[in-house]
Image (cartoon, rainbow, N blue to C red; front, side, top):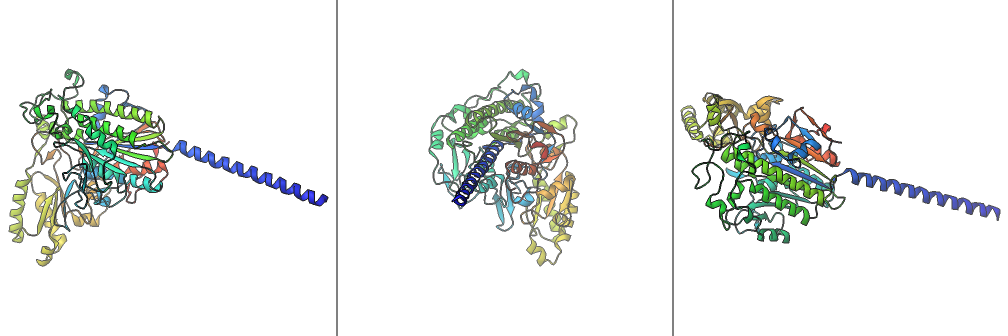
Length: 557
């Protein structure tokens, strides 16, 4: 009997120990879960400002409020020597590279448009004729990310959370929403201007617009921005920019001078021509309005499963193209964007909670000073007429080879050869590439030329060839690449453009802010493909599958 009691006592003690041990383990697991939920953000917000040079951050600094750019820079981490590591520096490749952690050599988006060697025609980076427009009867919604060859950070977050984490992407431009959203986005929305002023999407994402989007489209949000564009501050304070009336700026329709206020009939008409909004800072404002509605109605950042909101501000690009980087219009656009950023951050504080989200802000490319302005300041600059270059080049082809048939296309500063014709003429491809390269090198406004064979055979690690090689995709890019002289462009005489491997097109801001981010700054070189692996490391998820960038360790807390 005593032995039986002893056994019962031992069993009871063992059971008690097991329960206590299990409770301790449960507490430990719960502690880990709490720790993880406190460490990981509930929402990541990616912001891409179209055509934002780095010096817009510093040049207009004294005019910014405390809640927008300054909040991100002062309370977050500022990468001051941040660059694109490839060319062409344009919107499609820019957005793809930010989100894939790769360059066009890997992700395949080699331009906004490019010559497709397989289809023998020009293609657009986001177009997809297999899809249908949602929210419009036009072709504006026939888009998808199918030309992008790799995953994005947004895809990886979706995969990591078993598709429970949401991704919503928003931009005035279709490519500014489609490419950041990746292949798995719950939704990507872009703004159809024309005479509709509606946010639309593609059947790639959904069969019909959500009720909140339809309600936004039926509201007077877009109409409210059809108003005269005046400066947000006294124009006399805009001493960081050139004169308001000068020959380096473009004109809105019906204008006779490029001066404030801009109040043309197109802008004031409340029922049509919403395309006009895009080339004013109000395009950024309606983007912010829509992003805040998405934040609320899609319940982003409300639970422990991280979501992703990708927002691209496109009006900065439209304004820069029309008025140039030294215009008072571009300054006013950034001062107004600063206020829109403050509105967005305040909404994130309210809806998600301060400390529960992470933000990064960068650009998809920079921009050049208007070459006509530079010339007047005695700085070497100018314009190249591509039609004249092609005419001279065709004369060379006829003289050298007896035909122009061996060239299929010249675009994006690349020459695409017809390999079948070259084979039929019993010529070596690398010899033809080299002969053409030597010809182009002799043109007065061409600065550098490289061949596809050089891109194949070498691994460049610095300078212009490094940038060109990162933008050169073996299957999609051309046979000969040429670079114009610094500050030479193929463009109208007014307004700014981009696309080159020069530093004015590659140097852009990179700001990190919020959950998981240290406060600080660095002057060490960072590159666009570093953004995605930095965010992936912070989240503890896999890198996008084409990643070539590295995490910026100084940023991470």
